Length: 106
View 1 (cartoon, rainbow, N blue to C red):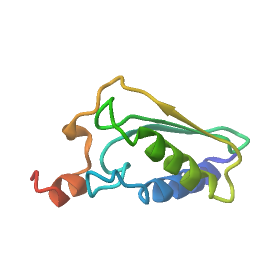
View 2: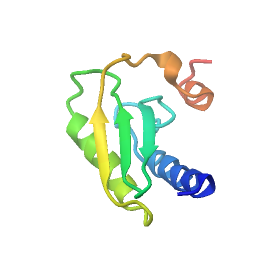
View 3: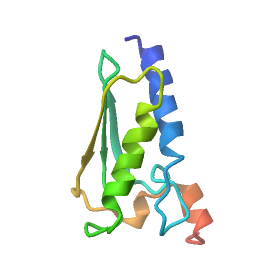
View 4: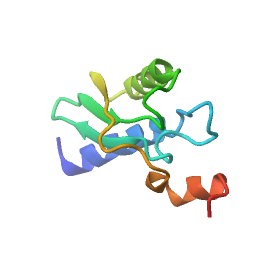
C-alpha cells in the first residue's frame, strides 16, 4: 500500500471514529482522546487501540462494537480488530482543543 493510500484509508477511519460518541459525554471518541493508535496493514486490515474514560464503563461493549462497525463499513477495510487498553490511563488532557472547548474546559 502506498503512503498516499494509507493516509486516505486512515482519514476515512478517523472520519468514521468521529461518528462514535460516548453517550455520557457529548463528544466523539476520537476528539475525547480515546483512540490511542490506528494501524492499517498492507491488506487493509485495521487494528484500533483505544481506551475508555473509566475502566468500569457500563457501556464499554457497546462503544467497542460501534467503533468496530463504523470502521468495518469503510469499503477499503477488510478485517477490524479493536483492542481495549488502559495503559496509559485516559486523562482529560488527551482531548482535542475542540472537545475541551465544547465541554467548557477552556
